[in-house]
Image (cartoon, rainbow, N blue to C red; front, top):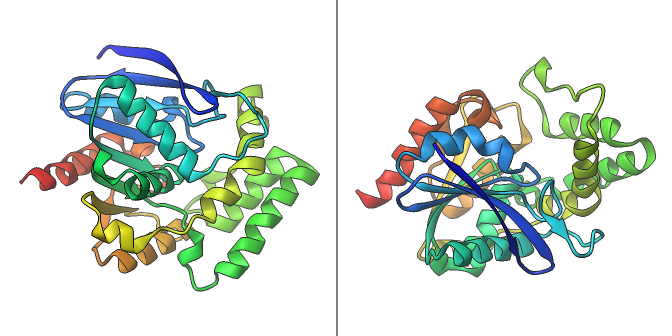
Length: 269
């Protein structure tokens, strides 16, 4: 499958994005996970869709004019609209995971006519939890850990806060330079704005976009299981189970893609 790489000048950022396949447009995105992290899923979906992946603003190949600008779900949603405009797509199906799911919620709220189906896979919308005040303090603590002890300690604190289903979730002993740069962006300019995002449930329910909330079959130990079930309850929809845990699209790509294709087809049926 041929992959073409592009850059786009958007609102204060030069976005890096990749396009694969042909057919209806499917945006696949994370935050802070970059295009490369979704390569396998994009390949699996490109037989039926034109799959667009990108590096979120300030991450990897997407360079900000102001490196100290915070990355908000609203700004990232605007970036997705700019990408749709660049490829000539009026609408798209959207798969967002984790912070990318929060971006998708902002997209469906601010630009509802651009989204056909949003699959929001495990969005960390901590403000929907009954102990949101405590979660906010915990996120502040993770940022402070980064400022005091650096990336490895902060990632360990992050993993402990959000939960883990196995021992393979330990952070690496050494980080390459790019991961260190991305970690700085995430902890100083993205973690709080993403986890603190409050979905406009009324707008999402009233809008034209179909909203699907995805939860990993093995994600029950994770905080994102709780946030996803809370969002599903607010929206009045049943969550859809996807294979694996929080990154099931990496660990169980084939099975994950099968479920995603089925979910997207249900809108057409």
